[in-house]
Image (tube, rainbow, N blue to C red; front, side, top):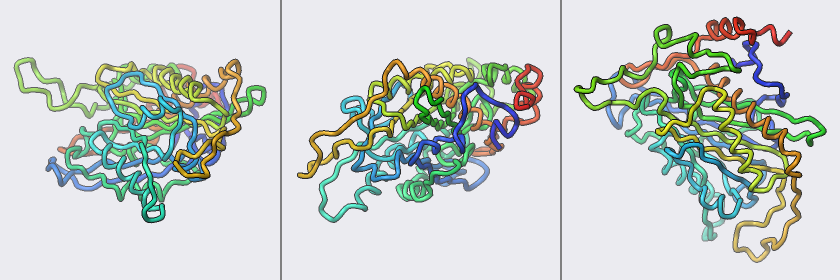
Length: 385
């Protein structure tokens, strides 16, 4: 189930065929989802509600065919590895992993292991993989380290260029968004022919936000469905004289956004697109809270004839590069904003109620209440008529 299945349309732009990041030709997405155990938390045993999501930027050898990329940080209380080299060289080499906060290292190493196993024995190789995270400790045995390098291989093996599973899957398995069940969401936009006809796709791992701030297409959905109606998974606040809080307060989480486009962008232009993800999040009611890691990455596949990032004797010395006129980039900005907003809505709509450790439950956003609220504000299914 997705937003458009409920008659909810975000923005004015046209989505691609799958309305997903995989609408950018060659981009593939795969998940490895780990769900096991119930009851009280036993560190190292469970319950486990976590996983890995992998985004593969094109259908060639991404380890030897880099793409231009750029990043943006709205609030930096999070991690997205590999950004220093992207900032330095403007190039990204390898797939993008998204997981939980305490599994970033093993996913990073798993990507390197995957690459090394493909090479002839004795080949010199180095990699600075890109891996992002959000915190799933509310539902998951975060300190049990249940994600392994084998899950990276599983997600990469599952990667395909078709529809993308959303909600509580892959890295988004244990995530919470605006105090509802959150997780993975994606959407796309195709800009008009006058602006180049390029495709922009966004994928988010949504794990942020307070209920009362939630907006959908400008409608105050969070106020209409308060925590008194659909309970928050966050425990009540501790008294000043009581014990230290056992969980962060609502709105403390993070969001990772991956933007892909087939436009021929240079690294600084990728940075500019990455910035616009923050505007889509703001439209949903995200505030870039001090405790939130709001990290965005954009890559562009419009230039694939880049020099090999190796020391091989046959490495290219020069490459022919196409560049989008900066004065024509506005349509891509709009596409990122709309696709980011719709990606978050899709994550919320797709996610199903999940009970994790210690019986803590993150409830799904109720579809009937969402549609009723949107309709009451003139943003309901009738807009499709």
